[in-house]
Length: 115
Length: 115
Image (cartoon, rainbow over all chains, first blue to last red; front, side, top):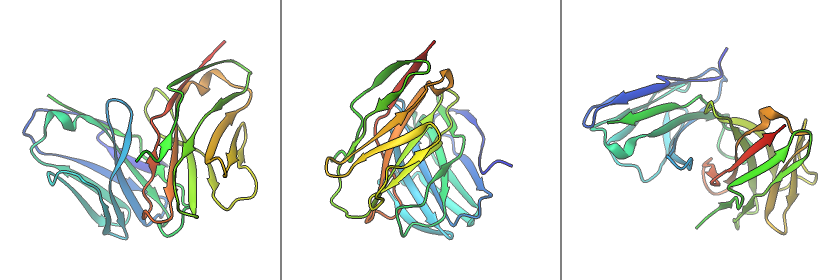
């Protein structure tokens, strides 16, 4: 009964390809996030959705497009992959965003390698 | 501007000893939350402990406690009775009142527990 799951866990692909990463949470949370962890382990937020509505869109290339079909799912589609997109992508979820108390629970991560 | 600073890239501790991992933060928001996460070599992000800016007492969760010094803007993680399984990367993060749920992470401290 995994709380936040991501697929695939590993993704190896060629430059220029388009790929998607899927995320699902069964915690009943209404807010979901995508974070990117670079090769130096630095984690930075990319997007956040609250009840299927985009609320955070950091300075991310528009090749990255999140989609939330319902509040339990947040997928990340990446077009025209570049070498610099190689990283670990984490999905996370929390109950709400209006206070600072909500803990974000992370998925296992998707390790993307662009060749 | 750096919002979370973890000055110790690496720490070593002997099994059964206590260890303190440093974290200082920068915010002018009166309301904020501080979080610690553990990332073992397997890669997942595991939530450890939370401290709210208005909390009067230091947070504790089992062997983890947070030494919260608000005036000094520090939120150090104390791990008591270290175990070999505590070897991991530890991240401090802040969620500020004005930032719609974003977590800002420090660069992490790699903890190694030796027998």
